Length: 266
Image (cartoon, rainbow, N blue to C red; front, side):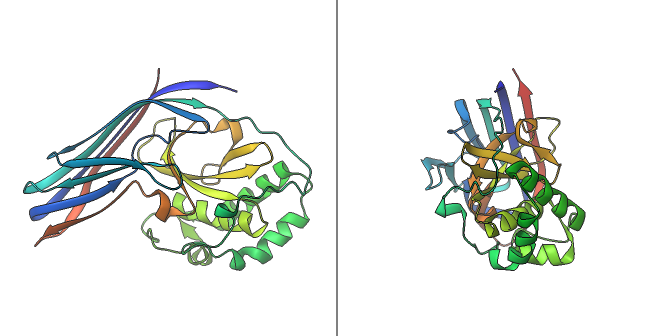
């Protein structure tokens, strides 16, 4: 098992057409603290500054809530963290080798597992081991989905992006989760940053095995200890793990002007 120390940086800058009098945001932009990650330091700040609270949600994610009431035309949200990542090794097993984790086995608003049951049954019946099954699932999804931005959005259900055959990492992860859950394997959505030249946040999948949670990345075709990423949040689907969710009060529109992320091995 590799043990890696990282420094992690996240910064999102928003701009607005008219003055904003109130800006209220929920943030999951620092590394997940638990399981294979240990957070050594973390700091979250905003410009303008605001009222900040911090808590853990029911999934163990570190959440910051920031409310800004100073009038502003732009806002910057920034985090700086240090984290130790234990890269997970994979231990194979002959099927069936399911484990029970009910929180990550059912349908959600974005993932309808009943839709994926015929696909899941075919792949499962053609597999002998968990490793073979996971590679077949990822291969199937990659062959069916073409990566394309601007076609789907954060509210697009997995079966809709599957029918279109188009999507981004969020869609590809949720389709993969739907197939795995249809086989009765616990699978969860992960949001974070890749370890090699990240340009934005990324979504991948963790599967519960008899030996723990193991990562797979169907978008980048990576498996197990190839994945040295930093996870920020886990969830049943995207809605549980969005990096920033918020509302603001203004007469004009607002938009994300620039996102900067960075990971440095130390």
